[in-house]
Each structure stands twice: as C-alpha cells, then as structure tokens.
Amino acid sequence: MESDLTFIGLFLQASFVVQLVMLLLMGVSVASWTFIFQRTKALKAAQSEMRQFEDKFWSGADLNRLYQELSARSNLTGMSAIFCAGFKEFVRLRKGNTAVNGIVDGTYRAMRVRMSREVEGLENHLPFLATAGSISPYIGLFGTVWGIMNAFIALGEVQQATLAMVAPGIAEALIATAIGLFAAIPAVIAYNRFSNKVEKMENNYGNFMEEFSAILHRQAVAAQHQQAS
Image 1 (cartoon, helix red, strand yellow):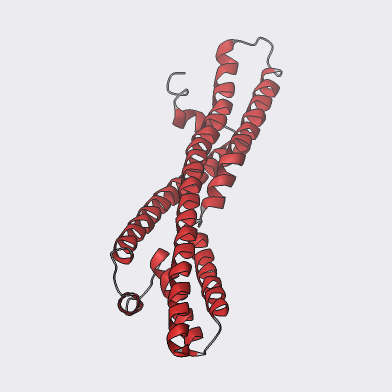
Image 2 (spheres, rainbow, N blue to C red; image 1 turned 180 degrees about the vertical axis):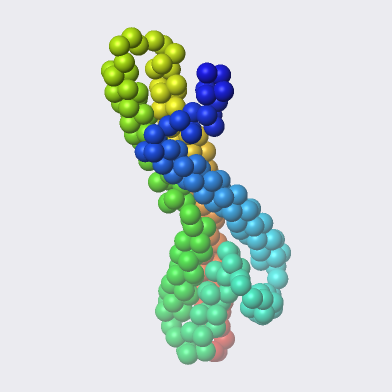
C-alpha cells in the first residue's frame, strides 16, 4: 500500500479521465512557467531600455543626432521606438509647412500608435496566465469529483468497506485538485505582477509622449517665428 500511495503509483491507478486531467494541468503548469520566465526577461529588458533612453534623452543630447543614432539600429523597441516614430513624423510634417497644431497632433498620433504596439508586445502571453490562473482549479476539481465518484462506485460493489480500500481512490482524486492549485497560484501571482509592471511602463510611455510633444511644440513655434521674420 505504501508504494501505491506514492504520486506515481496514484497517477497510474487513477482512471483515464483523472489521468487526462492531471496531464492537462501539468501541461498548463509547464506552459505557464515558460511564459513567466519569458515575460520576466522581456520586461527586464524593456525597463533597462527605458532607463538607458531616458538618460540619453534628458542629458541634453541633440534630437536630430539622437534620432539618427537610434534609427540606424534594427528592431527598435520601447521608448526609443516611440521617440523615433514621433520625431520622424515631426520632421515630415514640418517639411510640409503644416501648422503648429497639426504638427503636434500628427506627431502625438504617431507616437500613440507606436506605444500601443509596444504595450501589446509587453502584454504578450498575459491572457494565457490569466486564463490558467482562473480555470486550473476548476479543472482540478472536476478530476477530483470524477475520481471520488468512481471510488464510491467501486466501494458500493464490495460487501465490507474499509478505509484502506477507499483511501487510494480518494487520494488519487485529490491529487488533481493539488495539481490544479499548483498550476493556478503561480499563474495568478505572475499575471498580477506583470500587469502592474506593464501598467507602470505604459504610464511612463504616456508621460514621455506628453513631455516630448511639449518640446516639439516649442521647436515648431520657434521655427515658425524664424520663417516669419
């Protein structure tokens, strides 16, 4: 009985439905941890990129030189990509002799579109973690209910029932709930943590867009005055 009450032994003794539930939940758990490690790495890289860009931007660097330096790179992401999208649109509209308000509005829209893409990339796989965290306990509970039901059906077929007879069936059923919680808890914690980080980064992107738009507005007004004089 001791060997039968090990995890492997209980898994092998479980019914096909309970085994299927366990395998499904273990697959969900593996996928969740894979996405957790991926998102951790991606968000750390995005935060590092944001800090490096802000250091360069607010150090008083020339915007044209900064744009040329960044645009020469491939696969721009984060705040650098937002800056390049906005400055490129700013230069294009200014060459077309667009009004100041039109230049600022067009630049802001270009940055807004790019920011949406960046935030969408940061939120990649977060819906899966939310889904895994919400449905895994119910999937595990289904396996538990099914296993206990089979255990009691088998118990009803014997003349004399003992605890030793019913214990393995109930134990193998409860493992499904345990695996469901094991899959759900890290997914919920990771989802809440990542969502909070993405929200903070989105706020930082939005604040940068407002500040950068104000800088470009001043440049556009100054350029217009120079042309008028």
